[in-house]
Length: 385
Ligand SMILES: Cc1ncc(COP(=O)(O)O)c(C=O)c1O
Figure (spheres, rainbow, N blue to C red):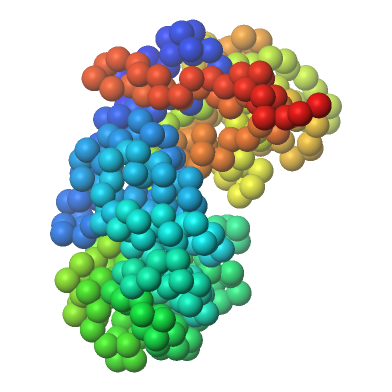
């Protein structure tokens, strides 16, 4: 974490309250530069699901970044952020009829997730530029819930069915501009891409030349991107594709963000806990994926202790961190949960009628509020007694 950012976090917690998502624009910009340097001419379609905050995607779009949308809502976000149709690709299984219509209206491209999807897509988005999502059928090195390129996952078209999927799409009048893959998120072993890209390139002899090859996202934060980029360009080359597309989400935003949370209680059962004002409704990743987020006590430097950091939910699984070593927290101390810029705020929910946290961005040394804290009144507004 950038020291200049870290040094401003207590001030942010005091000013905006907790729980609070705080992001560092400079970190996002640096990650984008690293990506652009490694991938050269590739087109970036940021996977908004990682962090769809309008303030962030507007800033990314101003730097030429396009978007991958997986719902009608994300499509509207991309449009609001200023993206042109050509800067948007609509993906995902189970698209709504209205999603095809809207994608077609704005000139976005779509990715078919199913060999039989084309007739419905063509009814609502005639002649739209289309990619086929391929499931390369790998064993992928990530948590099961994050692996999308294994043969049994619900995603994409199996390798053997790709020629049929292309044929079906063309018969329906769609323009098949290329293939796409996304093998999963938080991939641990870069060799998964070697294998997946080889399998993808093997499809070239079955489906012929195409304009685009999209290698998805999922890049582990520790990856050396250069060799990965070379492999991606080689796979694109196998199709004679002029354009390599990538869909990074976490890579761009994960390390830019922290969740700040206040210690409300300390307690002991058979284990020692600090109970904080965040939990599974603010940060789902530990519970959903067993994700481990670094944590530290920003308020004081005391003797180090080992504790579980617990949320307030009436759920035994509502533990943000197990066996966390940190400076012995007092009630009222502010803890910093790092690498929370991706799939943090975007997955926050109103479970337990908890208002979602505010989100702030440090930009040019000043805090900008990207999303104010939700209120209980707002949550209740849509309900009728
Ligand atoms: C199709 C697709 N592309 C890209 C991404 C981005 O993945 P990550 O945030 O791990 O880069 C996802 C997320 O799972 C996805 O489903």
